[in-house]
Length: 185
Image 1 (cartoon, one colour):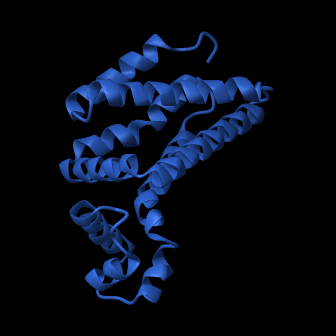
Image 2: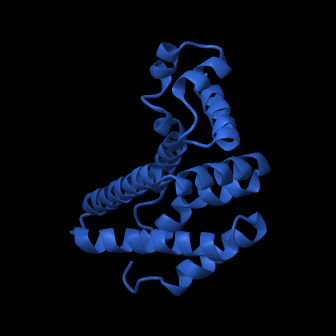
């Protein structure tokens, strides 16, 4: 049901605009009450930002699955594989494009998106520090945070430069991350 609500809301956002679409309209289009809508989402903002949350969970899971002996940088690159994989599916790629346009057009959503992106980077940094600690290393948390930020900068640069062409994006991301590979990461 949550997915159906999200898809319906996204269609309304595209047709009417995000700010102009009400929760009542989303609920009615899905065939439920406003109260039922709120069982699934706290607000219409959450409908849009839900995909960011789910992607963040997937990135975290991928990072946790990486071998402890692998470099931080290589682990981060492999953790970004879900982003590359999403581009290979035309329907998912189009949905992500629409969501990006909605977020970019709303200062409130953009601020919330950037806040969640920062939380994701912090979370991934903490995972990497914990992983290093389990290996007996004493990582410098500030350096790990900077490395994570650098990896996300590579992801953003590849996205802006290469767009969403699945044949181009992965190699572009690889090239970008290789060019910025830290000496000791």
